[in-house]
Length: 428
Ligand code: ZN
Ligand code: ZN
Image 1: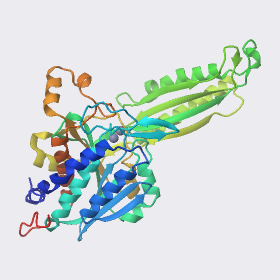
Image 2: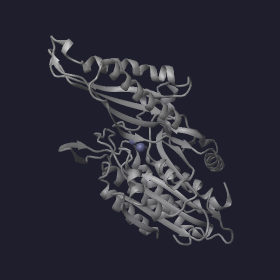
Image 3: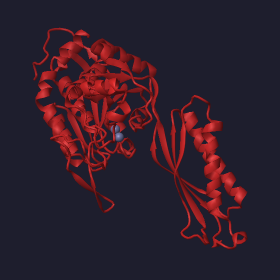
Image 4: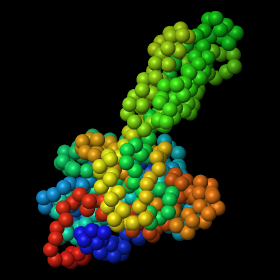
């Protein structure tokens, strides 16, 4: 561990006093995407106590805390704040019983993805850095983002002027709690999380009586041909070894056995790990749909609508190596490699808007004893709850300490170390 990070981390004790309690409060009071009002208020209050410059209401409920500490690198750290419409089944004493209204219907709300961990850890890291400003120089920008789960929270903050508000930054860093042992951290260079695109395709036919197919252009048969032909995109057009998925999740047409309908709607989900593959697949889908429409004599052009789009998370190699080296130095054999993830994230929209490199790492959230038991039984996938599960409840410690430390250690890999007398804790 470097001298500067050990002096800074000596202040972790000052954070423990409020962090666990704040985490339990966040966990018990989750809020859905774009509804993170209470969370944002708590975040802004805590940032103020850490003497940050605080900007609220960025892209709706987004909050930005800036810790200016002289000339030096500018490090952006991001945490997402939103929860999911899941009925919590962790049995924890601080489990959520919150409800929210979505499209007029009441739904349960739960921090089933662990974004409460991210918020508590980033607030902790900012507080540690605020208490130890004599040991480093530069600027820390803490971004608390709404609506990650619906893929548009990062974009919303950018469209609301995040880049102008913050000014130039040198690097962007982010972490996610994942189902591996608490106390461990894991990094990965290159593609790490999939890009995801959902697509609604509407194809047109000509409706007619079910007994008179010669008077119709049947969109049911057209849609069926499209679904079959789409299976060739990954099998025949993507390089073997380049992971990609094209799933038809929904196909809808017609109301009755003896009526040929006049249109059909197909919903696709597409996962890729590189912009070239993503573009190639989207182009192939459009080409196949248009060609099948022509083959059927479809009377009107097909309509394509993309929604719920997540960018690929492609970790910069140099940035990742720098973080991985700092983690190896601090965490020793508790720092490992993160496997390729099939999930998706909108974090990378932020560094892309700033035009800076980034990395995204994982921290463990599972009780190490439970993990060890499941591993010994060869039942990790079956016995341990994963993100978005109603039973996903990260163990508070060492998860919070590890996530807080990881953010501080990674930020210090950029911030300028300042020598001199050890004043750690002097501002606590
Ligand atoms: Zn999630
Ligand atoms: Zn998440």
